[in-house]
Image 1: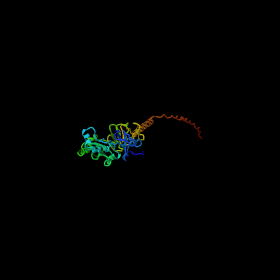
Image 2: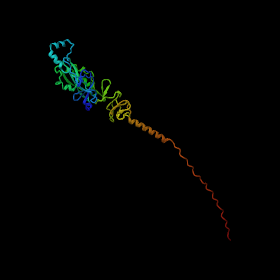
Image 3: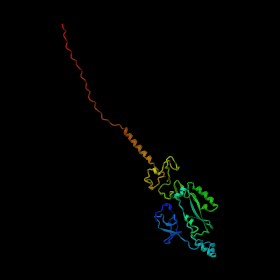
Image 4: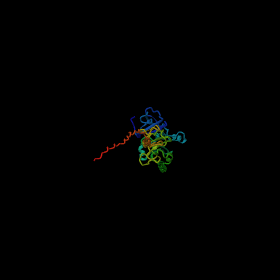
Length: 315
């Protein structure tokens, strides 16, 4: 398969009851992807997919529970309608993953089907939602609709209010979503389940990175994340070596942070301080200078004056 960017497909998992290989009709259980074009492939990525998948068509009458007595009577009394009921395609279940564009908008649409006689809900794909009228599904017994799901920091509060407002028109929908903060963005991290974390782009965050890994504060004189000190982020951390953290041995992103952070500038300042201190000590140590021997002083000899000859007197 040709290369597909991450925003062109989504990953899901099947239990082996819904999908089969198109080429062999053999049921498939495991991870699969749904492309933006609506095709299903077994595997976790387009590059590692092992074959195209198609939904498994249920056998006649499989949409009718065979155990309850009322359903068995219905099959006997209404064989034509029972056969028609069993001939419909099953509505495939789907678990969405928001994209980076969805997070930039702060919400995304979730698509659902409801069985009218039992009020059973099922999350479906956008493709199934669009093709519901022409896809061979039972349009009498089932209805499809969409809801707006918030992805912001306060998404739990917003989704709770939204679902309560819809409960009057769609009874039971509120309890269908027990996790009202699902897919909520928390300082650059989306938690899926109890252990898995992804970036808003959908890329997986390495599990070896600590729980405190989150967006840092990369702007000068600005606090975008109150959990992180000012101007601390992976981009200026000493452990960051070309987007690989030498502390945790994992790939990271420049604008994130964890508690193991050590500032490159601080380390450089400490080295400079040590260097200055050593230089200062070197300057304060006295150096021995060679003593020069003064030249010998010559003592001037005393001057002796000769007596001047006496002059005789004249007559």
